[in-house]
Length: 446
Image (cartoon, rainbow, N blue to C red; front, side):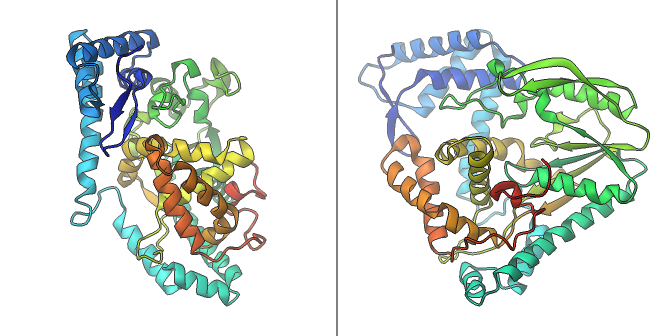
């Protein structure tokens, strides 16, 4: 039991001091350099707490920087230089992102595909769905089914372009990687790309990357103790590369099997190989992460990136955030298919977001093509399904410094959804729509 009871966050809020968070942070840094020793992480965490207790008086309220300084010092002094380096790099990256937030108004983000955005904004303006007000006006005029049709047609155009680009490189491409942050629509898009290319005579073999998860006991956790499936280090990247090399060379491999009920992996479970004209199809959060396929030449890979790049301003003149769309999508999907309380999704989302900003979104510029999976009509459907929940969560989290991120998101989405004309009837939405992956009723087999 530590003598410290509270710490001060960078926002100035005071929250309980939880040594387990130090252990999680150390273990995550160890995982980043190939280590997976929970006991050592626990030992080092205890050493950090002891150092803090020797350094500061009992009535002292620690701040984040003091704790991080102690972690760095302990890792170095205990001979864990590689882990210390990973921890320092992660700390510096977070600090850089915080500084960049204040510069966003004067310096464009390198993570945003500006050329693609311009075309989407032009399309939204032309179809009068570039603001919440214009969207509501079209709904008031009975045009919701037309909005659905227009949004779906634009998405289909993206799929056609992607399929054509793959066919242009058919003599060299051995694998198609469909990547993007959580709930961007990868599963539906993968199926629909495969459908289009099969009509052109292409054969695909799917590789389920989920089977390459390490055992749950070896997974890093977030600051609240939840297992982190979002980080690329949750996957056996070395084994993935080994198998990709062999598959691309026409060799047979035995892929593992991951049992999500037990959280354990069985190696050498299912045989897989590619015929000469087969293309490996990979749907993964981390398909663009450099270490995911570092052993495969670029000419053998076609990389697609997905994001709901909706271009619509709210009543305050702010653009609707893509991460908010994906948050609601994941809430709906997790609730329907994984028996996961949407409130838990909201509480965990800050960590999902932090991981994707570090490990997924920065690599969108390496994609061969970017698909926009955002639909202007999805917001009215969410308004009817989710408004009351965000209103409840806004009240629930108000004044809770440990759930500051959840509160901010709840306030923002409560205000947005409250301003949109709700639509309950989703019958105009096609059965094979990317949105059916989240709202249910899909005719596709996932």
